[in-house]
Image (cartoon, rainbow, N blue to C red; front, side, top):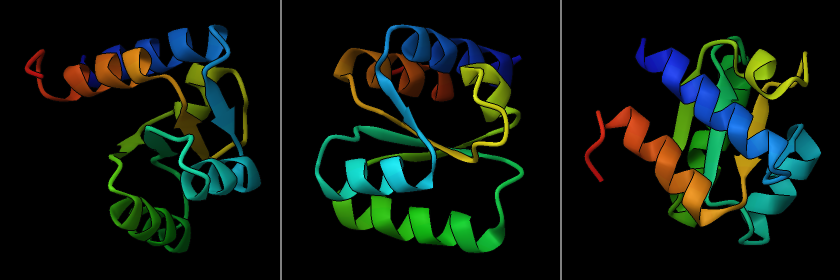
Amino acid sequence: MENEALRNALGFAQRAGKVMAGDFACEKAVKGGKALLVALDAGASEATRLRYEGMCARAGIPCLCIRDMDAAIGRYGRKVAAVTDSGFARMILQKTHGGVD
């Protein structure tokens, strides 16, 4: 249930044009300070997961692992997505904490 709420929130952000998807775009968004949250697909490799977790930790932004993230944003095969809007990032984070900000 929680994962479904996360996927829905991420899908809303994608439809609003506030998500960058793919390795190159997300790395650029994180390093450029545009990413406010990074979502990794649960099927991402361990190397990808560790790289983005480290990159996000250094940038001070949350990194979430979401099952079927690529389907949620309608970009099949993408293993990483960056949310670039504070409202959507906050909404997604609230879904991970059961509604607590």
